[in-house]
Length: 113
Image 1 (spheres, rainbow, N blue to C red):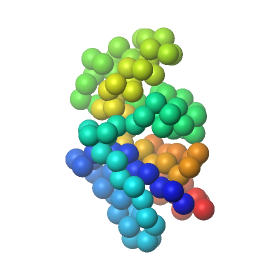
Image 2 (cartoon, rainbow, N blue to C red):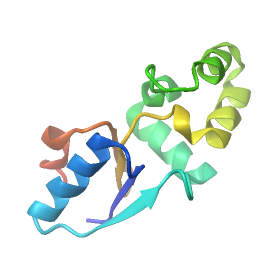
Image 3 (tube, one colour):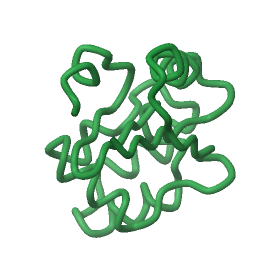
C-alpha cells in the first residue's frame, strides 16, 4: 500500500486517520494541506475516485463566501478555485494509489490491499 493522508494538524479526523494506520503498522505519508496542498493531478485523481468535486467540499468550512462562489462557477473554474483554496476540502483525504476517501472512513480502509 502507498497511503497518503492529506489534512491539517488541527483536524481531529486527520489525527484519527493517522492513528488508525499507525495502530495497524501501515506506513503512510502525511501531507499538511496548509503547507503543501494537493497538486492538480492529485486533486483530479481524488475527484475521479470519489465521483465528484462536490463530495470533497466541506459545507462547514470557515470560508463560506468562497464555498458559495465555488458552487456557482463553471466546472473548470470550480476545480481551479478549489485547487487554490484547499481549506474548502473535507479532511482527511486518504489516497491509496487510484483509490481515495474523504473524511474518516476506516470501513473502507480495512478493505484496501
